[in-house]
Image 1: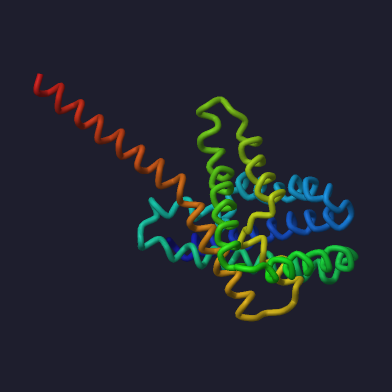
Image 2: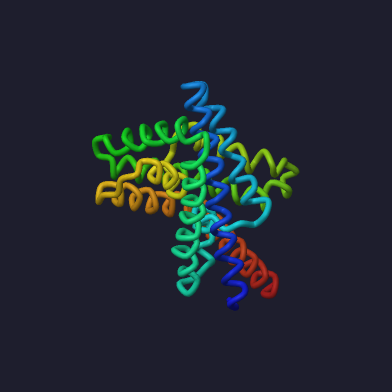
Length: 234
């Protein structure tokens, strides 16, 4: 990767976090205004962020996780760089919201969500398991543009629907969660542990489908080789 490519990669990671922050803010606003009904409205609004990321090829940590099986050890450095860019983009949105008219509405809601997460018993396990489900759905979403057209399906629906599901269920997205933690305004080992558990869960959930597809592709190659050898013997 050249210096210019590295710069573009970093900027795309920041913009990706920026879009997640905007989607998260819209989701918090919907919850603040409409209560329980706002969860569904907020989930739909949040999907804007992922839709923009997939459409414009921005770099999202939870989306890049799906490339781990083919990335190789030498390419893993991209993941922490992407995550740092993402949380910087989210931080920019958080700072802008703090100074906007929305602050008094969405920030208390974000604080309440974080307080609830941190107060759970066995919060680390729950965060990890929740993040696995999120990682799985995000992979379905970001890979939709690749596989949906092959099945004559709408890529837009395939991209949006998994995001709406994970956002409505409240599954832990390590990047989106950062918006809530920024609004929470307190940092501790407890917070760091929760973030770490959600990162680990997103990775586990995100690589499941790619690993199975990789095994499927290798099985096809092996079967083709076996068929070719059998044909040559005949």
